[in-house]
Picture 1: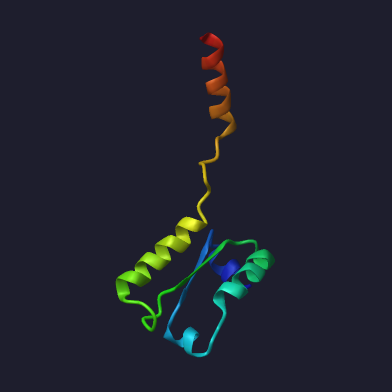
Picture 2: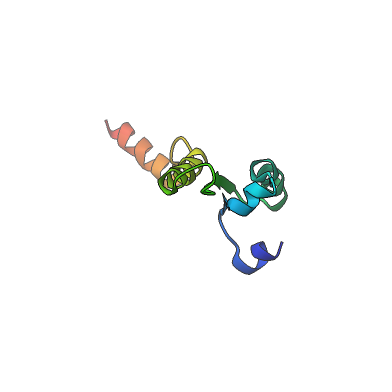
Length: 90
């Protein structure tokens, strides 16, 4: 895909607009297939103004982003070794 070549994003955020709602574009259905194809996480959120107020749209986007976050932060190998060294001293 051109966007992957040109921009090399770490994540793509698709925000549904009035237009995507009117033409019944299924962003949530398309995202997993495209995500698997290009190897970039895609966050989808409806913030179209048809169903929600502006602030509800903001909340929807934030909730969609939070759903993609890992449960725990990954631990780097150097941190593991440091913790192990400290526990050996104790």
